[in-house]
Amino acid sequence: MPAYDLLCYGCGAVANASALGPCAACGEPMSIRVNGRPPDDAFRVRSASLWAYANALPIARADCVVSLGEGATPLVDAPRLAARIGAQRLSFKNEMANPTGSFKDRQVSVGISHARELGIDTVAVVSSGNVACAAAAYAARAGMRAILFAHGHAAPGKLAQAAAYGGTVIRVDTPSAQAVFELCIEACRAFGWYHLSTAGMYEPFNVEGAKTIAYEMYQQTAGDLPDWIVAPVGGGGLLGGVWRGFLDLQRWGLIARIPRLAGVQASGCAPLKKAIDLGTPYLETLREPWLNPRTVAGGIADDILFDGHTVLPAIRTTDGMALAVDDEAILEGQRELAATEGLFCEPTSAVVVAALRPLLATHPGARIACILTGSGMKELSKIAAQTPVFPMIAPRLDALRTTLQGKRS
Ligand SMILES: [Zn+2]
Image (cartoon, protein in one colour):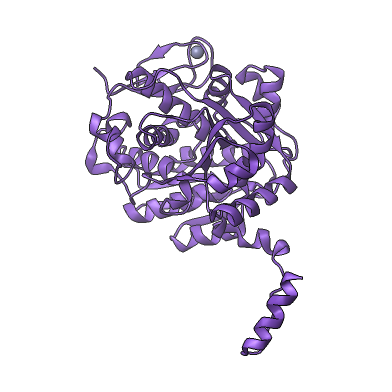
């Protein structure tokens, strides 16, 4: 049996692994479907990294794997926030615990391992920051070169982090992520680089790592999965990948039913919500990019659904939901999660917190797990305006007492 096939979620067509590119029958991008399955132990004991599930990933040569111990992140119960918002159960898959501070390490670890199998020594990505950090770190780990194209929504703190790993950061002067993609793809063709962007419509290997979030959640809940899984959506590769992970678990006979999947966007850039509300087929959504994306959640300010071919069926086939939340609610969600549960995520991740009350309003008492995609430590400047003025006191107990009394009143 071949290691993997290509599968079209648009029409169900299956093709040989060598037929990379759009589906011959319907034109949607094809996705990888690996034919192996992880050993039972991988679902019984906590793994050391996502490579515990290597049999479900499309990398044949173990000597080409580039790893920093990504994945195997904690699933953290959030009882205090659950009580505040009326969830029967609430937990957070803490992807901030990945080596560079975001879930993109999963995607990049698998993608760059594929580049190494192909014998390519330079990788290039389009990024708002987290993919650039991951690509630069994993390229450093592999002794490879990373070219990082930053689009208009890139966060300065993340670009500084990416540069620290030795990556070459190039800012491109356009508000359109799609325009930067076109440049990156052209450069990869011209210079023989591997295109490592986490956009499944261009390179399906680079979104395979997200499947392992589903496998880990199955292991961490001992199969007692929540009713809903809530994740931020930019291009859609995360939620589409998690869905594909659950499809694997179903195919292997481990689960009967896939949790309902909710994708959350910022109201200033919500092409997924628009497509779900209008019932738009995937290829049609590509013809109308979101004009002028504006949001504090820069990590999901994608003007088109680069993984709409998986994230749209993920929501449509699980009786799921698309939500959009405004910037004020996002920043309040970031603050509320940090102050009630000690989990400090970036604004892009905090969209899931902002979405909890609207979701519970229509589905009271639901059991929910959220995916917390990236660390708040990367973008401290974004909360500067909310930070209080700190009191300065003399080094004396009476001065401390006066200040604390003033705080209480
Ligand atoms: Zn098709």
